[in-house]
Image (tube, rainbow over all chains, first blue to last red):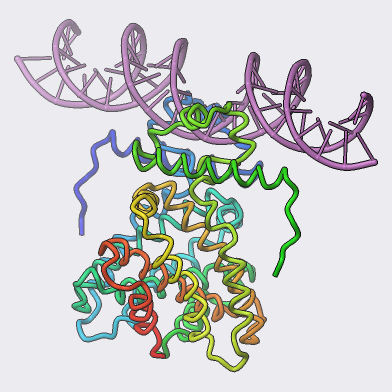
Length: 198
Length: 198
DNA sequence: TCAAAGATGTCACTCGGTGTCAAGAGTGCG
DNA sequence: CGCACTCTTGACACCGAGTGACATCTTTGA
């Protein structure tokens, strides 16, 4: 499982990206997203605006970056599920990864606060939904091959994947609005169970 | 059903908005969304940029304006369904309005072209998804009262409404990518039938 | 007819984002 | 070590989407 060692340039680049996101999220939570300008960020990080945009293509990417690889991971996880398993059950298992993330790493106060900011901000929320729909496309591709519904004129695979993600989102928003009281996995089970009994 | 006669100012305002959207869509289809600047639009309409922004709050609103009232209409339609009807069947019936729209008014070449532009353009697509999620919220509210699942900690209603809209979207994209070959209603039936048999 | 309310244009400005170019820092190699 | 090559950075000018302020028309209604 040893990855190729990253070249030093790439490592420093990632480190800077990391610091920058950290800094940005803190500022966003403190002052608000719209109220924090790129110039503020760049100044706080001690770099020029131009340099900032060499690390992030847009202000939104600061917030959405964490979802970058999730789609591919989910698709891979789906591919790794046993062959005979019903698609709905497979999707539920695959979402376990997201549940874990929410239950463990996402417990920090600022993380939760940032998540709420995204939901409340029209543009950010739109961007968030766009990311989710991109994930869906990747998972959909895998779902098509698994179910054998390869005909692009067949809307069923897209419907099922979309429904599953709707459950994921429903569980997520519920989890956020209830201040993380119930375990995320339970909410997900409730949501997905309401669509199709497992 | 006679509405109060609108004041003349409001009527001219709507007329201008209508002409502006028409003009804009034509230009977007012809030159592309990003390639058409607000200055272009304003010039083509014979008004200043500032005046344009008094009719539309943003460039996106030119494209998304048509979805403004749809959510409320859907919620109203849902409220008008017979009391005992299962929620999934009610939602299918309510979506009939959208199906009608697609089958009748949305057949113009430019309308279809514009719809594809939206799907292809990241920002527009994100904005589109945001509109859909706002519609969902309205329909969700009505769904909660109908099903009696009023507890905000209960994700089931959100899951079902989300799933239904996923079917709607799946049918929509399929309908678009297949060049409108199958009737929209059939696609919707297929999609929703794959989630829950009616 | 006249005053209030509304619509429009102009101008200056903010903010996100990009192209260009020159200067600086890091790396590899003889 | 020194040299070339590449990557990174800052500075600057620029674009497009929006917004605020103010002055000027036009419309409306009494």
